[in-house]
Length: 127
Image 1: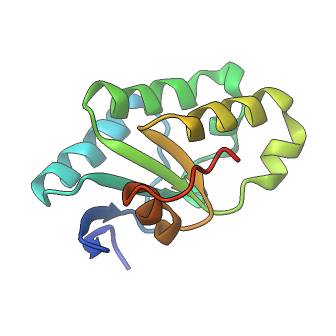
Image 2: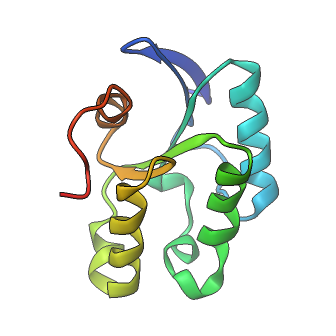
């Protein structure tokens, strides 16, 4: 299944397919943001499978570069799926994820439904 737009609980979401190309640079994020805008989505959902292991090693700068594009262009983004292996390997990453989940723009969540709940004003994910 390719990347596609859908509605979930009334919110336009641009959902990336797990088997698509990996996000390795800010320009990859910019391409997704453009696609989401064309579909009038308010959120981009990226499966963790679309991110290489280097994304989760903060010192590479890949996560910062990619996620900053979403913040700059005011597009909310969620990373979906199980990243527990990466969290277990890096206390710094665990802190980063916790801080992201406290904010309004970048969330690491188990699935897209959880992100839609957040958009509706549901319980905070940082707890």
